[in-house]
Every structure is written in C-alpha cells, then in structure tokens.
Length: 363
Image 1: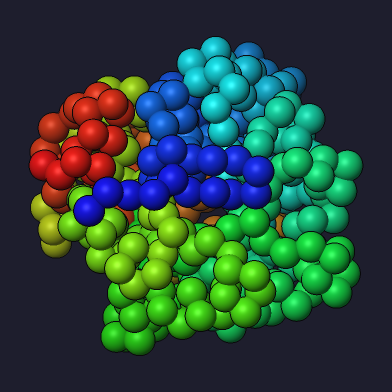
Image 2: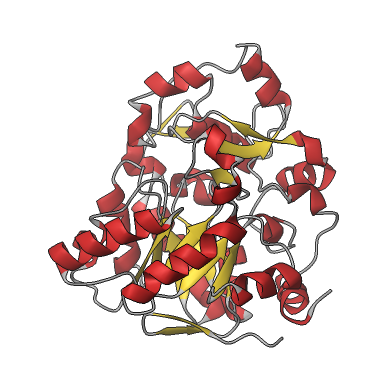
C-alpha cells in the first residue's frame, strides 16, 4: 500500500506521518527539524522552552528553574528552537504542540505564529477558543486533539459559530499514547475507547464538516498499524514514542535508555497534576511517589492551570514541570519519563530518515 500525502490547511505533508509533540525537550529543533526535512511533519513542543540551551533564554531562575510561566514558556527560547529547526528543514511545514491546559496558552500560541510556525496542534483540554489567538495569522493551520466524535462536534460547532472557521485537521488520540490521556482510568481500558474503534465515528463526524482530515494517534508503531488506520478512514497518523528512539531526538541519552530498557509491565498509568491520567515508565520517581517520599513540591514554574499553583501536585505527589525537566536533564533519580504503551518495543537508536523509510516501506 502506498500512502497519499496529508493536507493540513494549505500545507502538504509528503509522508502522512506527524511526529508527536513531546516536552520537556524531547521534540525540539533537532527532532522536529529532521522529521520535516525528511517529509513528515515535525512538531516542536512548546513545553519548558525556558530550559532550552541551558536556560539562557529564561530571564529569571529560582533554584536553577525558570520562574513562573513567562520563563518556563520562554518566548525567546521558543523563537530560538523554531529558528534552529528552520535551519534544518527550510521552508517545509513545521508545527508546534501547545497544550491547552498551560498557563499563558494564548500568549504562547501568538508566540508560535510570530516565530513562523505553520501548524498548531493543541490537546490537554477542549480548545474551544483556539482561533481567537491566531486571527492575525490566517495561514496558520489549526489542529485540535480529540478523543471522541462528540468532542470534535463541540469544537466544530463553537468554532463555526464564534469564528466562522473549522479545524484544518484533527488528531484523534486513543489511550495507548504517551503522556496525558483524554480519558479517565476506567475509560482507558474500555473497548469502545480503543483507537481502532474510535476512528470510524470520528471520520464520520469529520465528514459532516467538510471532510476534515483525521490523524490517528496512540499506539501506532509500524507500517501495518498505519495501513490499518488508513483503511479505517484516517488521512494520517501521529507517532510520538517511536521517535524517541532516534539519534536526532532532543531527549537526553539517559531518557532514551530508560525506554530502551523498559519492559512491557514497566509502562503504567499514573495520576498527574494536570488532572488527566498520564502514561509513562515506572522508575525511581514513581516508587518514591507511591511511598509519599517524592521531592519537595514548590511550584516554581507555575506550568499548568489545573494544578492550581501546586495544590494538585501535592495531591498526586510530584510537580510535573520539575520532574519532566529532570528527565530532560537526564536525572534518573527524580525524572518523570512518559511513554506510550509500546515504548518497551524500542530496542535501538536509528536515524529519523531510516525510521520514516521503515514506516513507509515496511521493516
């Protein structure tokens, strides 16, 4: 089976593979730039840009961490990442993933537009006002992430009524994805919420709004999975975890090794201060948290609004900004390592070019 190009707004993605946005610092300039260069869609994560280039773009640090959202989501850091990714991929389409749950969401979306991002992808909440922040940038394509046909319908109705526009594509994410889920713990295991059972109803809903392209995500691993999703009506796929197993991935080598060394039973759902279950690898941190012996929670970076300045972090036992940034810096003692359910299948590092060739042509 040969795959058709993926169209998102005015942009053509030659290989219909979207690299998932992964923060802190897993998908920045090197990974995203190279994915776009090789014909996929590279996606820069907007999370934790104040950590980029050893925190030189963070104007104020406390305990060596970016202070508050203005520094954690550093405009200067974001600009530098996008600029450096552009040096790799040229004028090929380049996307940013900006979580709806973050503090300063509107400002970060505007920052992405000003820096020349072509496509913005948003999940971790229902981004009903996403077009509000891109009104001055009509060429920027908007892609919400949903977990049901109902969610897509709500977004389309509100966007059409308020802004007279519709999503340029939609990412449909099932419960096998890494990081935060759009489901409760119980819903993650229900048959009706598995990706293969969600694609058809979401494609049907998307058809009612002008055949919005549906990009299937969560557990997609190889060419066979891509073919299965396309046969169900998807126009493309999004893959995050598998791209961690590349030389170009911006993640610390220790983070890559955590996934390479992980066994199937090590990948678990855990509580998160964001308010959604999150999927990652059982590590020293998860053991500390289970015993209520985790690192002190100080809410220096004020990263996500649902956490309520560290109140939810205290309930679940860890600060997500601090622990993800520890993973970015390679700290195996207190780092938080997200992974999709298939993360244990990573066994070696290969190049982005080789990975995309495997995905398109088969192993």
